[in-house]
Image (cartoon, rainbow, N blue to C red; front, side, top):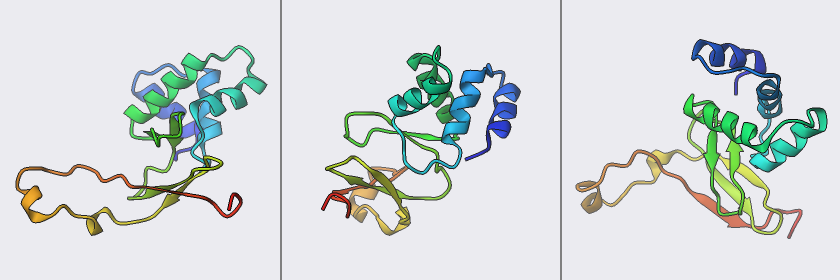
Length: 138
């Protein structure tokens, strides 16, 4: 994911508002491979900016998604997660005990529909979620 400074420039170039709250969210996401929930981002941002709203966090995440800078994930864990890793194909491991999410690099080309289904359907993306227990929870 781009740095906070790069995202600030990108937002301004696209005519999107840049506020200190948004810049705080940019910083929280940069280098973060934990797939944080929107609520976790909100809680962390609120420690330095008590007036930040959850709506601001959601709007910023959705604006980042619209620019292709993050993916918003619904992994069935009850909370929307943010994936700042948009480079390359990958899938996800989800621990059913603690909810931890990790990336799994797998080429989507290895997973193809049977030819009889490909005639009637064009695949744009493949998403696989591996569920189980991480070593900390086993």
